[in-house]
Amino acid sequence: MTAIALPLPGNPRRLRSALARAERRRKVRAFALTLPLLLFLLLTFLVPIAALLKRAVENPEVANALPRTVVALEQWNREGVPAPEAFAAIAADLGALPDRADAGALARRLNTEVAGARSLVMNTYRALPLEGATTPAAAKARLLEVDGRWAESSYWQAIAKNGSRWTADYLLAALDLRRGAQGGIERMPEDQRAFGGILARTFGISAVVTLWCLALGYPLAYWLSTLPARRANVLMILVLVPFWTSILVRVAAWIVLLQSGGLVNRALMGLGFIEQPLALLFNRTGVVIAMVHILLPFMILPLYSVMKSVPSTYVRAAVSLGSAPLAAFLRVYVPQTYAGIGAGGLLVFILAIGYYVTPALLGGADDQMLSYYVAQYTNVTVNWGMAAALGALLLAATLLLYGLYRRIVKSELSLG
Image (cartoon, rainbow, N blue to C red; front, side, top):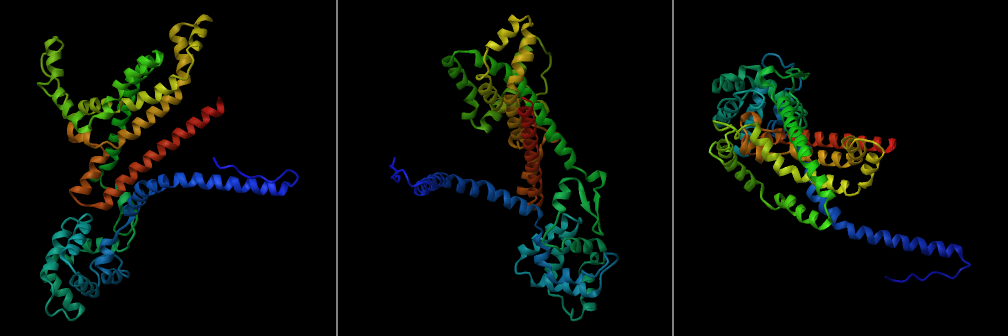
């Protein structure tokens, strides 16, 4: 460590200045050491989240592809068919698209609003240029000849509604809401409300998994905390074994174990507990079993770290003062482990609500969680806005849970 040459006593101002310079150098060195980690977090965590939130409200397809049409529809009251100038504008905009892929992106975006818009846009794009469409009235007549659906107001309403480059439609759809034809927010028709039920299912499965992890992990963590350090470390290795195994491998193992002719059903039938194989696969039961197995270490580790710091003499003192052993454990020991229960429960629940692989492979159609639909919109329907909105919904739920946990912990600390 470099020695700091301090001025001789008797000059307080120079002494304070030297100490301030030394403190600044210390802070600069500390910041330089943490700078690589900060840059890593910025590039791999904060930037992707910012891009996710931006894409959830971005709506560039219509604004980029149909700029003239958007301007022509600004004065339209969204009732009936717009003026012929709008027909001429959309013919000019579609004709100016540089690539068929641009028309395809526009068609997909409008098709999410009105069924049939994809074929309407692509049919019109293939028919361009329109011969004789030299005036707005002629352009309207030629477009109606190409596809008579241009006389239906719903397609024009979809274009007008999505003319802005930024929209809340994706976030509203994630909450089973939508903007009406006149721009007001309304609930979706009952047969189209899906994500509310999916979000409730995601939270329900995550809560069940968290409770099972707590029920199984608490006694195991307590037992480990009472063992000598050497034996506890050996057994802790067994707890950590799932961390060293691929999730896909563990899920495949559970498929082998839980199928009708698997080890679990054969053991139960061999012991005489059941006569017919139980349905343990491709349903909620299989999903919960596999998720509990995978997430159990995340509950045990926080509990174990807290329990190791709780003196065992407290319970013995309560028993010596006349309390029953069970009552002493519940009223003296368990309250001191609330921090571990909260941390483990929050960690397991947050990890569970983002699960995709396990429900997709072990669950049925009614057991898929919100992450499954994020993957569907990303890889199958290629609706990045909807995928980003659902991801933002999961992020908001996670932050809300974390904020609630922090509030509870602070209130407990203040009461303590």
